[in-house]
Image (cartoon, rainbow, N blue to C red; front, side, top):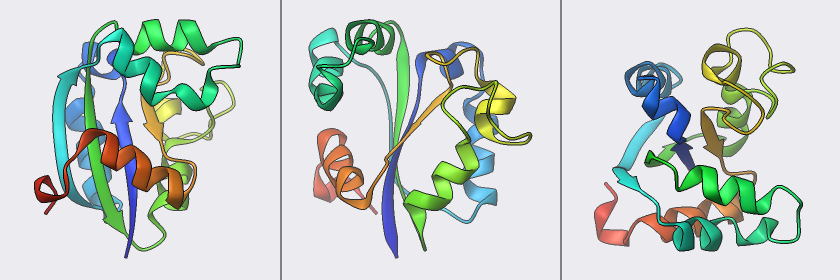
Amino acid sequence: MERTFIMLKPDAVKNKHIGDILQRIEKEGFKILGMKFLKLSLEDAKQFYAVHAARPFYNDLCTYMASGPIVACALERDNAVAHWRDVIGATDPKEAKAGTIRALFAESKEANAVHGSDSVANALQEIAFFFKGYELN
């Protein structure tokens, strides 16, 4: 079994899509190992997205991610990282396939409802950022 990290972004929380997205997670066969509802500080957002620090969108992304509550989840299933990325769709909801989470719930390329780890290695780092080992089932 493989693990991945996902995060429901402030727009998904604000627009009351938590339940819909959690249902989709379960429908897709993921086991929820851990889940937290919290608000990131700007410093936490900058640390989490440090890999993008040199990118032009970094500051706006961090400000946005600290703008409201998020839901952080550690998930598990076979081929978890790739499967979740298929489920969420393209970063830009205009390019996301019909039926994907971003096609259904995203507002824009930045406010695109969800984050998903892009590799197993990053998933493990991202899970560790939000969860202590004993917090995962």
